[in-house]
Every structure is written in structure tokens, then in C-alpha cells.
Image: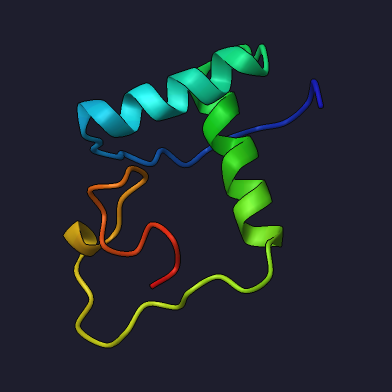
Length: 75
């Protein structure tokens, strides 16, 4: 993967609780960076089956990583 070229940047705003959850996951798995951890979580999420699809009219605030989010468990 030494020749991997990433040309696109993605900005993501998180709550402190979401960031804490990602950092906890990252450090437990000895991931080298937040970016690497997020890429791995995205890879796992995209490979998962049975995830909830967004309904028409869903807003970004309707999705969260922590318990405060309405769709955390796929509801």
C-alpha cells in the first residue's frame, strides 16, 4: 500500500463523545492514526449486512456514533 494516492479530502464534524468512542476503538487496536481508524471502520461498515438505510428526509443530525444518536442500533 505504499503507492496509495489519496486525492480527496473528507471533512467530518463529530461530538466529543463520538470522537472519544473512535479514539477508544483506535487505541485498543493500536491503529496508527484517526484517519486509519476511520478508514477501517468505514471498510467494516460497508462490508456489514443488515444496516439501516436512511429514510427520505433524513438529516445528518439523525445519525450518530454514540447513544445520543437516533439510529445507532439501526432503528
